[in-house]
Every structure is written in structure tokens, then in C-alpha cells.
Image (cartoon, rainbow, N blue to C red; front, side, top):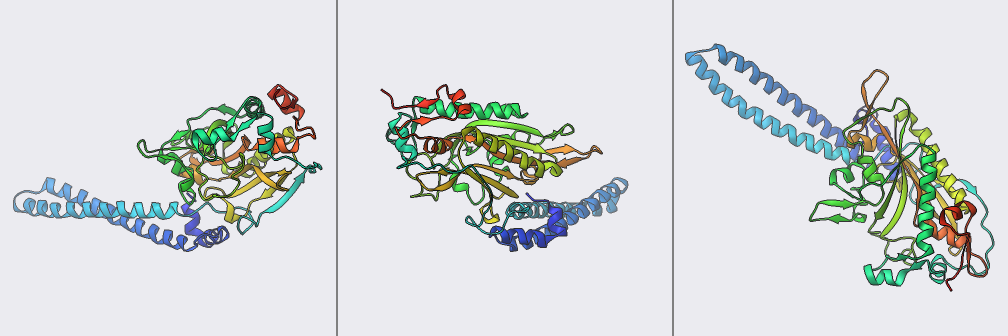
Length: 418
């Protein structure tokens, strides 16, 4: 949730953020009205409770007819208090719903939708590849990917990584884990099933909730990123950030329905229902969030340098941000057979939005609890195999791995099995 104080003091800022996202600015007015009603209900309930407390003292001192009258008045007052408390609870609920309906306040992101990003830089030049094969043709000919049996076993958008395909993914993720730990991240293997309050706390149960797998019998959610369990890791805690941010790298299998993507990227492993990922997640003081955002982008660029693929960095427009993100940078790698750039990494500054929902705080220099900020960023994922295979393919159909990645995979060149 956004800071309610900002809504009260600068509602135009929040309205403008909503418009930049392509969302309803009148939600701000609905929240302000709900907040006024909530405070009025609290005041009414408090006043009646105070009156009830004072009456109780008078009853203790009274006797006879006076006491009888006071007890009768007390009974009436008790009913009024009960009604006022119910009204307060309803007002609290309505205010909370209105508060949660508003996305995070954009900080510096361009306005517009999916196609209104700004390209910040290009890194590397796409090399000329005569008659390039796509990643699936390469993966199948080299014995790395088996889509047909994935579909047979689990349905569309499932696959097997086989032989060196499995080793390639493990090597990539191990390289991400090694780089993360070398940069002060604590490596985590989190649960991939989470409670509703954790999923809601990260902001994933909003507009894109239809992309999340829900287990009805258990009322649990399968995560689409380890950002979710890592955000819940310190729920209801006060962190010690006196020596700097807390950084975690979560290695997990991830699950997404890919709802709304029917007919898009149905070939290969670009849009699939299950994949593995190493995700960076950071807790810090709000004043450090912008710096940490640039740092995690730098770590993502270091990973992309290790797989040696051309890429560009984009500043994602407000209308394409998730509800919890105030700003997001994507790194998109060149895919030769598509003649375009496709997302490999994403890093979001969620400011205090998630931590406020999950009650994650730290103590300031005066010892007073304050809401922390959170950030996340992709350090490696299954989709990266697309860019690695296509950009490093050779004329003979083999794939030569960049040296740093090859050390983690255990081979320098992938050739067709004998």
C-alpha cells in the first residue's frame, strides 16, 4: 500500500500516478472519502466507549433508584457501543479495500503503455548469422529440449530439459548464485507454496491474479517468482538495517498460467508454465532504494556480460508496471530468429508498497520504527537459454558457450549427440 499520509497531503500526485498507469484516478477520491468515514467512525466509537467508562464509575458509587436508572442507561449505551464498533469495523474494512486498490506511486517512469518504454542503452552488437536456427530447433537437434514429451506428460507449454540442456540451466543458475553470494546476497531456497496474505502482500492478487495457480483445497498459491516468499520472509518484523541493506537471492521453481497470452510465443520455452529462476531481493531504507535499484541493475548486466549476448536496457512505462513497482528497468536480449529484443531480466523498485502491506520495518536513528523499502531483480532464468543458444550457434549446428558460463556447465561446445 502507498503511504496514506501522501494521499491526504498530496492527492494530485497520486491521481497523476494513476493516470500515468492508465488506471482510475477517482480511486484516490474514494480512498479519501473512506478515510474520512473511518476516522469519524473511530471518533464516534471512542466517544461512546469513554461515556460508557464514565458511567461505569457512577454506577459503582450510586445506590437505589439512581443505580437502577444508571444501569438501564448503561444497557442502552452498551448497545450503542456495540453498534458503533461494528460501524468502525465496516469503515476500517472499506478504507483498507480502497487503500489496497491503488497501485504504487510512480517515481520517474515514463507515462504510457507497453510500447512507450524508453531505451536507455544498447550493449553489444548482434552478429550476422546466416540462416539462424531458433532455440527450439537447436535444442531438439542437440538433445537439450524435449517439448513433445513435455506436452505428452503435462500439456501445452511444458517441456523436458535433457542431458546438457539440464546441465546448461544448472550451470547458468549456479553462476547466478555464485555471483550473488560474491556480492553479499544470502542464497535462499524458499517454499514455492505461500499463504494468501503473503501473495496479497506482494501485490500479485490484483489485475494479474489470473496468472497465478491457486490450490483450492489448501488455499495456497504457487509462486511465479521467489520475490513472493522472500517478501514474506520478514513479515511482521523489525529489521536491523544499521549496517546496510539485507540482500537475498532466491533459487526456486516458478509457475505461471500465462493467462491472456494465447497464441503468443507458443513455440519453445519463451512463455511456459514452469521454469527455474534465481531472483535477487533487497530490503533497505527508503532513502537507499534508488541507489540499490541501480546496483541490482548493474548485477543483472554483469550476468548478461557473462553469457555474452547483445542486449538493451529499457525504462518501462507506467502503464506496463506491476501494481507494486514505482519504477522498473528491463534488460532485453537480442533474439536472432525473431530479429528483435526479448526480456531476460526485470528489476523493480517497490519503495515501501510491499513492506507496508507485510509490516516489515526498521528502526531509524532515533529508534523509531519506520517502513522499509523492497526491490527485486532477475539474476537468471530458464528463458535465458533462448538467447544463449541462438546467439552462440555455429554454422555446423553446434553451440559454443562463452568462457565464464562454460566453466559452470562443464563443456565449451555443445554438439549433437552421437
